[in-house]
Amino acid sequence: MTATDTYLLLRAFCDELARSGMAHACTAPGSRCTPIVLTLAREPRIHTWSHIDERCAGFFALGAAKRSGRPVAVTCTSGTAAANLTPAVIEARHARVPLIVLTADRPAELRDVGAGQTIDQLKLYGDAVKWFFEVGVDEASPATLRWIRTLACRAFWTAAEGPPGPVHLNFPLREPLVLDRRSALPEDDTGRAEGRPYVVFDGGRSAAPSGGTPPAGRIVIVAGADRDPAAARELARFAARTRIPLLADPLSGARRGEAAIAHYDLLLRDSEFAAAHQPQFVIRTGDLPTSKPLRAWLAGLETAQIAIDPDDTWHDPDAVVGMRIQAPYRALLGDHELRTDPEWLASWRAADDAVAGAIERTLGEEPLSEPLVARSLAGWLPGTATLFVASSMPIRDVEEFVGAREDAPRVLSNRGANGIDGTVSAAFGAGAAAADEGPVVLLIGDVALAHDIGGLLAASRLGLPLTIVLLNNDGGGIFHFLAVAGETDAFEEHVATPHGLDFSRAAALYGCSYALVGTLAALRDAVETSIADGSTTIIEARTNREENLALHRRVAEAALAAMPRP
Ligand SMILES: Cc1ncc(C[n+]2csc(CCOP(=O)(O)OP(=O)(O)O)c2C)c(N)n1
Ligand SMILES: [Mg+2]
Image 1 (tube, rainbow, N blue to C red):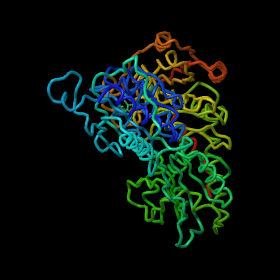
Image 2: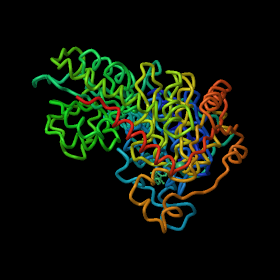
Image 3: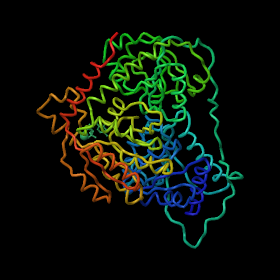
């Protein structure tokens, strides 16, 4: 085996990734990964983004794959470098994001003998990946070149299909790791004609299910996180046409149209309303939304509940779903004319509108609170924008307070495993994957930003823009909502974890712009300027954790008081 063999095989491998539709990949530096990094970087159809930190690289790739819906590769060197991809791999598994991890490794003779930077990388990510394969790269013959082409297609389609997720290919690579400059890489004609991929895939899952009695009467649809924006819009139109209340998480992309019930989290805290609005039939799509009142309400219903999901995600912690349909929504919902109760949607609509009014009155235009920022941002951003929302209070506030809007921006979040890690990198990746499709705005808390502060390097090193709206309450505000807040001896230091960071200095270190805003008008101005300039700007709003808790309680009380009573 020579360097020429290695490079020939890897070139065929990357050629097939590109033919299959890969447009983006991420690299991190090292020695052992040199052949993979150089081959990716030299493949003109794949935009290869360089990172210093593997954890950032993994999350960047995750964000790019999430936004584009297409597999993105990430490669790194051996040892702990590969272990640093673990959180992104786990998130990709839970959020069903097609990620292709290509780790470099020492060959067999250098394993377990004290060679440097060598750990056991076989099945390193355990069950978090859909497929692991140890790629024995050897001589480049027509037969092995064809084989590695099929391997690339298989990795691509395994990541992309039914349901999507991460795959891991481990590449043992022998020295020399660079080509002899004097020898050009020979031609390889083992690829299919006309640039076609070696293997194409047809899951055959487009057929409509048949049989069963169509639901009727008081139906609700509960739409959770989904990865197909076009299907979500169709779902919203279907709900409006058939007059079915659509309880839509913003992550579903379906919080739009006349039937969208945005404030189910507040509505269902009203036990009277919850009891009076028991449906006869529940249709669930996508993931289960985060809202605790919604989850509790669904769990307590004695109604038939069906889950439709092309990925057949098993999201049913309370074991109440009676039928699972693995099909695209349009197959089921498409042309049905359901017999629904005309008063039913009107009653939900009136309550949702009343709660929206209560939210608006309570939040007002000032002071600049966390819910106000979440609600306003989602209300102003152009429909072409993507709002990437960090875990913790930002995503909860978006779910609770953001209204329905026909041309709503797309909302993305790392909700697969609900981590606060890698958020900055994932948002940059989402921007990079579809730069011409509109700006990405990140809404993030201070602890999450501190956690992935190194992700800011993408701004200067990769020249990428990102508008970052930072809600700085100096610690984890979410924990004030939990019982642990009462454990005052250790709460602040060990749970809330205030840090006192001056984020303007982080902006300076990473070459980003910075703005501190104190009013809604200043926030809007700063966001619009950042988007127009195509810059990376940290726009900081300072809030207070205690006051935030009190404000959430006031809104909930106002909502309860505003509910229409029969
Ligand atoms: C990787 C990871 N570590 C820890 C947690 C637990 N956790 C959830 S929210 C949170 C605090 C987040 O604080 P911040 O980003 O400032 O948001 P806030 O709660 O203030 O809205 C932590 C540590 C997690 N979800 N993920
Ligand atoms: Mg915070």
